[in-house]
Image (cartoon, rainbow, N blue to C red; front, side, top):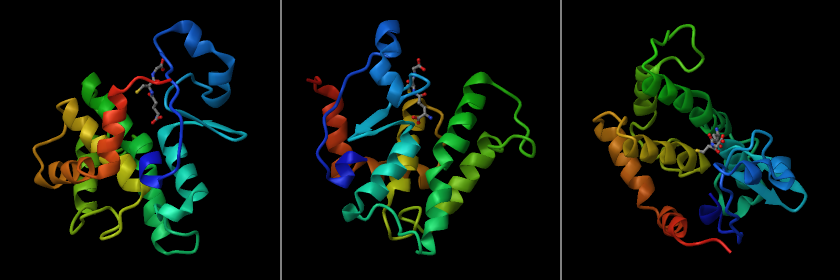
Length: 184
Ligand SMILES: N[C@@H](CCC(=O)N[C@@H](CS)C(=O)NCC(=O)O)C(=O)O
C-alpha cells in the first residue's frame, strides 16, 4: 500500500511469536490485539490492514488510490475495502477448519459464496472498479495471492488472472523484495 501510494516509510520488525515484543507498550498502542500489520504516522497509531489501507489512501490522495467522498464509485470501493477482513478472512478460517458454514446465517456467507461474489465483481475487470485500480485491489488482490499460496484458491481463471495482475504491479514486486531484506 505504501509502495503504491509512493510515500516514504520505515519498516519496523515485530516478532509476534516473541511474547515480550508482542506486549511492547509502543506496539500495543498501535495494535490493541498485538497483531501485525500496524502503522505509526505522526501522532496516528493504528492496526489492521484494511483500516491502514483506507487511512493511507485518504491521507495521501495524490496517488489516486481511493474515489473521493462524493464520487459515486466510493460506495463500491468501501464495500470491497472491507471484503478481506469481513468476508475472505472468515471464509478462509471456515475452509481451514472444515466448518459447515450457513450461507444465510453467517456474515461472510460461506467460502463458495465468497468466491462466486468475488469472481462476478471482476467481470469485465480488470480491477474491482473496472478500469480504475484502487486500494481495494491492494487488499483483495493480496488476498488472492495469499489464498493461492495456501492452496485454497479455486481453479478459477478470473481469480488467478487477477492474482497475476496484482502481483505484476511494480509496487507489489518492490514490496515482495523488501520482505526479504532485513529491517533497520
Ligand atoms: N485482519 C487483520 C489480521 C491480522 C493478523 O491476523 N495478523 C497475524 C499475522 S497474519 C498476527 O499478527 N498474528 C499474531 C498474533 O495474533 O499473535 C489484518 O488484516 O490486519
